[in-house]
Length: 447
Image (spheres, one colour):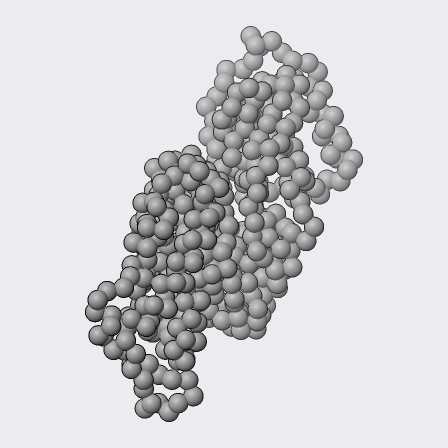
């Protein structure tokens, strides 16, 4: 699973201010230099893959000389072999992924070897941990930061689950709170608040095996609702507090941002496909026709005209010319309860965050485009609600510029080095050195 956990190292290298043989006086300290948190950007074309229940999308892009991304190729395919974000038929999923990636590769005239993929499978969970690490009065080094994260990951490790993100929200140097980057600060104890996102190991192995069948490796795994937030939230929303609801076909992803950080992410096992299935089952119509009814005539709000407007409905098992007529009210009456259930589940989860989640909700995903969804969400959640489109990207087709492709565009931003306001460090190298190496590092950092 090393390929799955190939997270980019976002910590820039820094000088160790403490002498190995004793602390120099403040007068002997070198003049402090301005530091920037450097983010590695890909030097050539790179690919991202959004694997969803109802669609699979692939984008190939590159970073231009001015640091902005450009889309070189785009392809999408109707989702197959995926349910509730997880792969349930590896052969069908392989065919759909190959089709989407092939279309993007043909447009970009390049071949992908690995992709950045959205994390929707494996029942992802989000947890917070507080970690303390003794420093002993010297300056905090990068090694100390890594040790804090190693300790946090060790505490967060759960059998059968794989840690995908280890995001330090902030640090504290003794009583100095709210530190973004503690390196170079003197303290006795370094504390960190760590946000960990993990998922079931077996589901990730299935995802990896499916992509290997497509001759693709995994460069990075990124939480799907976090990616949607990266592409749709403006900076003020991230700072003041906002919740992103990524309303996909099989799931509804939820990401809470505040103070520029991702505070929480979760996934509800309910999405637009459930609405479609409700229509198909209650009206005895094929699923494809139920999707058409939802798209063309569906609404989350009723109106007086719904009783009079009659809709043609194909019946399961009947001849093509056997068409029933039902009032639009019947379709709307099926849609509304399912969406109300979805937003009530979201409201219950938001209540646990209080004011930290802010007063703003941004809806993304294909299911958010249904008429009246924004108004229903505003009423049930008692918050300001808008439908979020991904920020414009050069070369992206107009057909992919809507809310349905917010996650794919967010994956592209992440893969290109943007959206990483926090440190998300690959610590596999820490574990590869063995016990003896860890002991040597431990003693070295304290002498």
